Length: 144
Image (cartoon, rainbow, N blue to C red; front, side, top):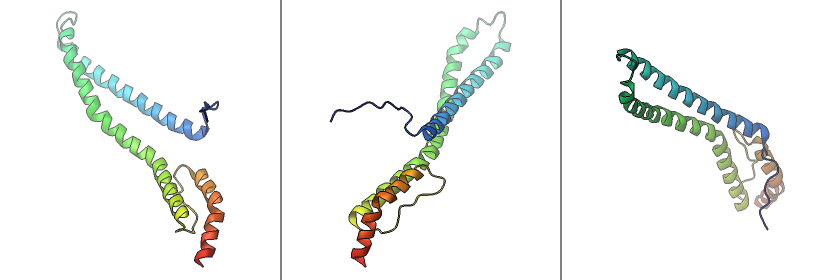
């Protein structure tokens, strides 16, 4: 069956908008940090120069390397930590639902799937419970 491109790009609109807004906000903070670090370094360097600041051209490559190094050293750990926190509320429920479906397929669970109240994918969890209700009930009758 050929792949049909999606006509609706925001399948889970509010979820997708929240996620994208967080990443856009994080990128804006990263750009602001870049600007503040570079501006601070330039303002520290220029007053010590004589004349029209022509010496700045000699200093600029070193300053840019310093800004890049600071950005990598500060932003990457922050982005990594923020990404883990953001994806935890998605990856955790996906893992839980996957384990639940494996248990249902093996006939080893009769309880409904549950995920933490603050996590994403609550609707998916309810749908999985509705879809597996008869299977779980049948397994419970066989076990009992």
